[in-house]
Length: 581
Image (cartoon, rainbow, N blue to C red; front, side):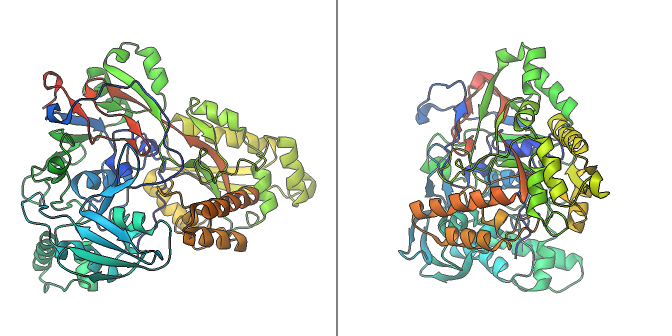
């Protein structure tokens, strides 16, 4: 039903969406990160704390500004990039979201929820008095519209698929209550469904599809048909009015706050229910995303035009421009969705289907050298889990950096000059900034010393995606983001949506499925720890680094501190004398 959410926070450029700043998803106060709850690592932060301000005295105003990658699609049904998720999290709401301070589930468009004891369903009670940005009231029909589109299975879904893939059916109990039946018992079902069920204005989308049908000289199709899905999928530069704190204006031949290739500005939604229900939240007058190259972004920083700035060489910037410390504070932290740099091996292509070869490749890189390349901002990785989580496989012996042993194990697998058969590997990677290039150089040098014939193919983003789909590669260099609830199923199960290397192991499939169904946290942790240990021994991916966010935040911005879900803007503000219009 949905497109694959490799949430590959891929390193195409130093941008926000799918660039290196993708692994800094919460770097600019990304509410998309705050949309999803998790467990385990609470997101340790190293920041300068600022005093709290009473909600009744929080200043309103200021256009919060940073540099981002331009989204290609902001349709709530089909969008999947991180920058699109960020924009939509600021314009639309889901049934539930998470508290950015505690990380716990909390009400959103549903004011309460009641899971069934057996985990098979959950009943949601809708909030009263909610309006869309155009003033239209939120109704049960609006809530159900997303499910009707998804249930038709007539189009690939974006990140909202994380909700609807888990649903078997929906019962409307009255005008405010609906019961969602899950497709399977899943410990994360309430979280995944509640926080990814984005609610759109049904009438707006029906009118927009009807308009497109008339322009095409066709009859207006019914919801759920392939014809409706085809037209709905053509809406990629509009998201319609939502119930979130901001609104994107971008109607064809109408008012627009999106200048392609230049900037996108979200304006304040004066109908937002949150500012009434939670006084002192979402105080900015707008949020502006500038589309700039790395040099232009640095120029904007030096002029003081930015509220936040992120770059792999941020410490070098501070060293060469010490005056920036007067206007900006350095912030470094972790958060739950920030995942792992890895090389995924294509386990359908010999000899990468041989675990002996994969383990030999795991001996090539020195983890400390990789950490140095990233300026020390991270932790060497062993699993699709946070190092601080209880399921992390700490007891598994880490593979050493040992080129001699790598050559020996490759010889045992039948590769090497002695056999007249060197191991040949095609490594595919997206273009990226200096740390990515240097990591690839480290691997290439180690491969050469181990007698491996390595072909590194670095591609710009669109070419990378196209070549990845062809599967004519042995290794795929990616940054894999984590599910906020900590479930590695999609990465390690043979049918997992983000199992890029198509690895399949019967014990991994069994453990991943059992952990997903296990409702007891203690037993689930034991299953996951066993699963992560198995994956590390089998090495379907070469784990490299768990990175950390580093950024410069304008000292004018107050009330924005890292939490378990990242740096949230929910309570942020700027004093009137320092505000940008």
